Amino acid sequence: MPARPAAPAADPARRAAVDLLNGVLGEGRLMSDLTAAPAFQRLPPEARAAAQRLAAGVLRGLDRCDALLEPHLRKAPPLRARNVLRLGALELAEGGAPHGVVNEAVALLAASKRTAGFKGLANAVLRKLAPEAAARWADLPVPELPEWLRGPLVEAWGAEVVVAMEAAHAAGAPLDLSPRSDAAAVADAVGGTVLPTGSVRCGTAGQVSALPGFDTGDWWVQDAAAALPARLLGDVAGLRVLDMCAAPGGKTLQLAAAGVEVTALDLSEARLGRLHENLGRTGLAAEVVAGDALAFEGGPFDAVLLDAPCSATGTIRRHPDLPHARAGEGISELIGLQAEMLDRALALLKPGGRVVYCTCSLIPDEGEVQIEEALERHPGLRVLPPEAPGIEEAWRSSEGGLRLRPDYWSDRGGMDGFYMAVLRRD
Ligand SMILES: C[S@@+](CC[C@H](N)C(=O)[O-])C[C@H]1O[C@@H](n2cnc3c(N)ncnc32)[C@H](O)[C@@H]1O
Image 1: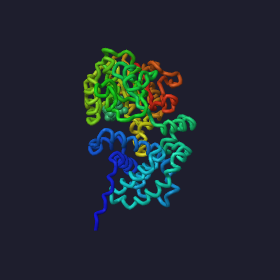
Image 2: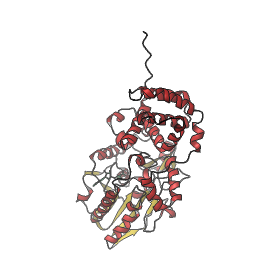
Image 3: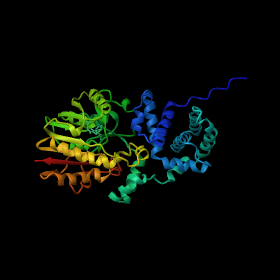
Image 4: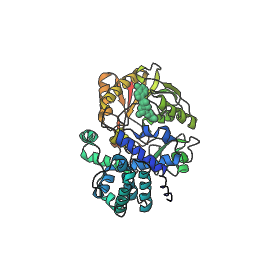
């Protein structure tokens, strides 16, 4: 009997994308953990970038992928096969050539005994979907946030704002860079534009390490909103500043580039490894300390930047896995930790020193309310009006901080959700 021709090997990027989807949707794991795994890191950089783009695309449009597939399925196949179909649906909706998309899906399913039985189904379903996918996708409603998050956000910001946030989440995020020195030169080199707040915005994220200026450390990746807290400290050259939750180091790099004598503290050795890499690549210097912020005894400091651990609900544009992998667990513990960290930060200041408190959260209990409660706990504590280039009046909140939302700057490509406030203790 003649040997059967071997099935074409599945594309490594698509295979990795489906593994990421299985990890997020099947095991409730975050993409950041999954992509740190050695097997993922062994892929070539372009395959890693493609896998993350594809998995994020499916997660951002999960309801839309399922709605496209649903009329063509009598019953939902098991998760692994369903994720291959979802990836195929996304690629067809994005205008992928039907023949290639179908072949890739079939090769992915053939690669495992657990899914090989679904090759025929995928072939039939994706072929039927091909002519209609792009038009139907465009007509489908923007996916809503899950109720554990939607409910509290509607209560805080109103339904209309949440719909605008969901549109921003579905649109995804451009690539923002923080320049080590000359923003205009970085924008020129990467073909980006300089934003009013000083970050450089490029088109869509591709393979970041292939962009000009990466190897020479002329910039680092940092959302425009995430770059604002360090700028609120103003001219800090020569000051001693503690970056209290520093890793992977976006804000440490900003402070070091501004001439600060910076101490970068973080509990996570693994994340501090990335901070060391970032310092090495950019040639910037900081004293790096591994340890618990609540037990830290250094100082006193002219200023403390506290980018506290939080729900990260402001970063869903970039991390569409978050609402799928999490269900709001642990947020009340984080709120308690944030308050304790803020008290510790205030205790480490010189008289007249300043704390910038910030979180990448959309939940007021992790932002505005933390400041209101800190003012009650600490007589003599004041909120200073946040000042930095590009700040818009609409961002100012009633207790004196800045509230940034993903639906802001919608004509420019949006920004992450963030809260930040400057505190001074006399
Ligand atoms: C929002 S991230 C910091 C991001 C960082 N500032 C940047 O701009 O790249 C919060 C950090 O807090 C750290 N962390 C959590 N608990 C901590 C603790 N008790 N002491 C110090 N760091 C802690 C986490 O490891 C994480 O790196």
